[in-house]
Image 1 (cartoon, rainbow, N blue to C red):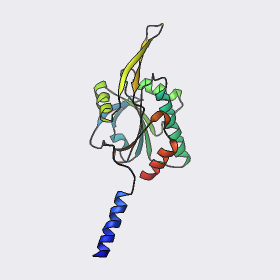
Image 2 (tube, one colour):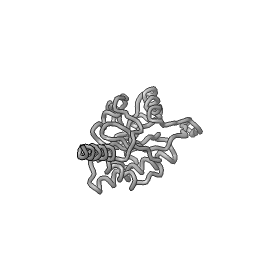
Image 3 (tube, rainbow, N blue to C red):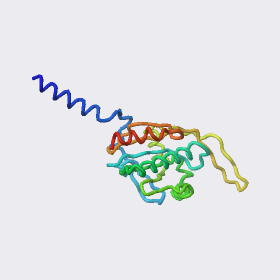
Image 4 (cartoon, rainbow, N blue to C red):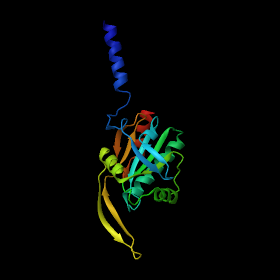
Length: 194
């Protein structure tokens, strides 16, 4: 009996201490029909099933947080390649689908010379994007706007500054501040769930 208790205790420790994460949100039973930067249909989060996923939330007119978040994701991607850690998908989702059409997202990635071999940019119909943002608790509120000499008007958002880490089962395990993420921390977290 004593041995049985020790075995059960060991199993409990192995199962519950295998990673240090509580599930923030389980997206495994949700599907959002979106399009990528090439205007190809994509289903999120299904497209990342079986992969660890680093997700950033952006809009391309953003003057500060989104470029920092995108650059931090690039640094994470480069570090993972350097350490030969594969099977990690990067996803940037625009919460401004009215401005961020596929070609806009493609240009955004090209200007920054991003490696799209394991990085996808997503947008979609506004109701679908709004539903997804609500689900993952990303708040984006329109604020100031700018009118250019040619009459073109752009607006900005006050928004949640976030990168999320999702496991191979499409469960969000951790939130990070996207514009100032600790690269060492997320790399360590990725290694824990690898």
